[in-house]
Length: 315
Ligand code: CP
Image 1 (tube, protein in one colour):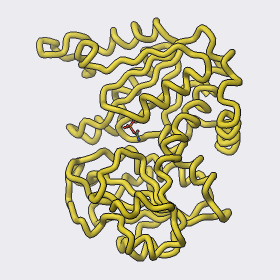
Image 2 (image 1 turned 45 degrees about the vertical axis):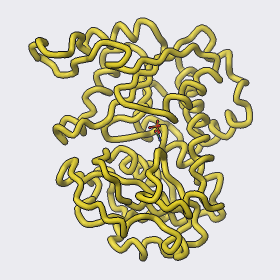
Image 3 (image 1 turned 180 degrees about the vertical axis):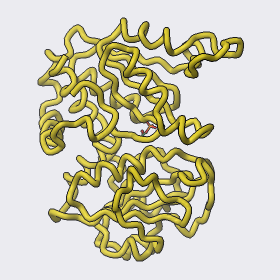
Image 4 (image 1 turned 90 degrees about the vertical axis):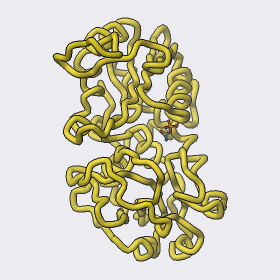
């Protein structure tokens, strides 16, 4: 594997899950792979889990790591081509990316959707410039349209907690005060479609995800009906794809609560975090024995390590 930006970069998902299970048992067994190698982690947006888990994963593999928060610790960077740079951004990605690439062996990039233009966001302008100009493997630490490190951890967590071969997995929209990107739900659907799980997506009208991610996945607009018999509830807010970046609803009637969880098959509750308590999910649900948000987040280290191991093996 050269770059990691989506599930389609993984040649064999079953094998990748085996790699993850192996590194979970033998975290420090592959330090020779990263010896004298460096990973730079570039953040255009804030992070807790991705920053710490990916850094830890690289260090478990013997790599050196450097973290750069763009704007706060570096020059502001221009990403548009052909612009007259007489504004507040003194450095262009066209120089910054190859310079960063000259200092490292792998680059991790976090660059969220900007919501200025759907076309720009869905073309993954920043991530693709890193792939084009860095000269080294690039790992998406959440792009404008996907969060593959999160989805890989979500898949591993479901594999660990499932009690039947074909669990019913429900992705539910939940309210949020701010407009959030579609990266996590897009990616979650994309990864779940690679399994034979029963996948149901539920959201209010107007929150349909992009067709290229949804394929023929079932949408159930009645949230309670969707929850019936579910084995996993994956909650997430996202803004509208159709009315791009807009908040169409803040309806607390979509908050995941104990009453709705009672409709499920003792479902495990999942969320990528950070989560707004008593907006997305009630305290009662996230603090219940069926909440697996902490082991889900802990698996971020494991799946990041599996991804970096597969890249290092081909360097
Ligand atoms: N889930 C996730 O990516 O968390 P951070 O935004 O804190 O990295």
